[in-house]
Image (cartoon, rainbow, N blue to C red; front, side, top):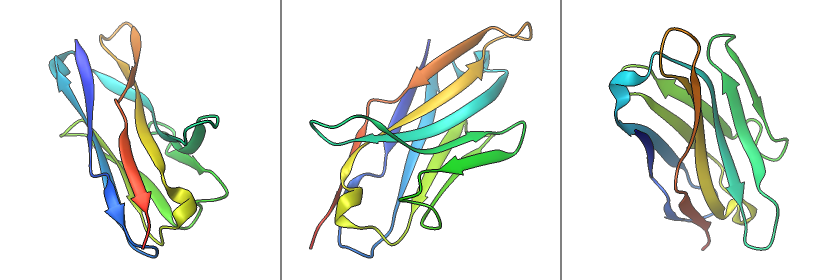
Length: 125
């Protein structure tokens, strides 16, 4: 089985930066490709919000309007890791951030959707 392990959350002052990491662990040797990656956030009592989403093969990304030009999603193929670089953080960015990977586990197109456990980001002075 493949699991996603997130790291990089924490407390940061307004205007600061954080980089979240989401690493695949476990049976990563089964992963033959990644068709989608994403970061989502949720504040207690509110709906989960898509923050950033990408399709690596197509080279496309999209961002929530609230984070455009501040957040960047990227990946390291060799490390099976997806990142979310966040700059200019605001108090309203405080939330639990979860990562998503859509991966193939063979060469016949069998896919799996993987979710991280979530990491808390708090933006406060």
